Length: 68
Image (cartoon, rainbow, N blue to C red; front, top):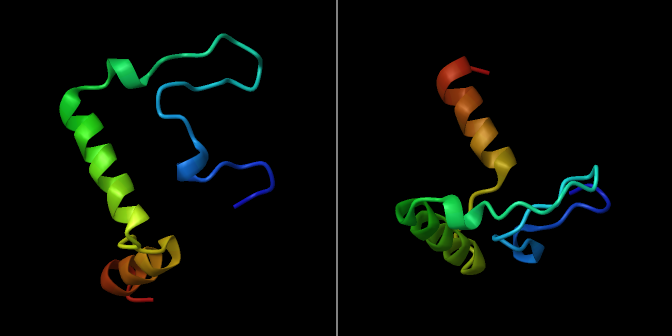
């Protein structure tokens, strides 16, 4: 993670602040309930340590689809 980046646990899911100081956008309320539930389930899985590292996913994709 780059300096200043927020981890998923530090983000507020209901607001997004643009770097050019535009007003905050409430994107969470516009999402379908199925998407909100999927995001909540994914965050709970990560909290339980059930996530897969990006580097592992990329290695699997390369070996499966790119034979590298």
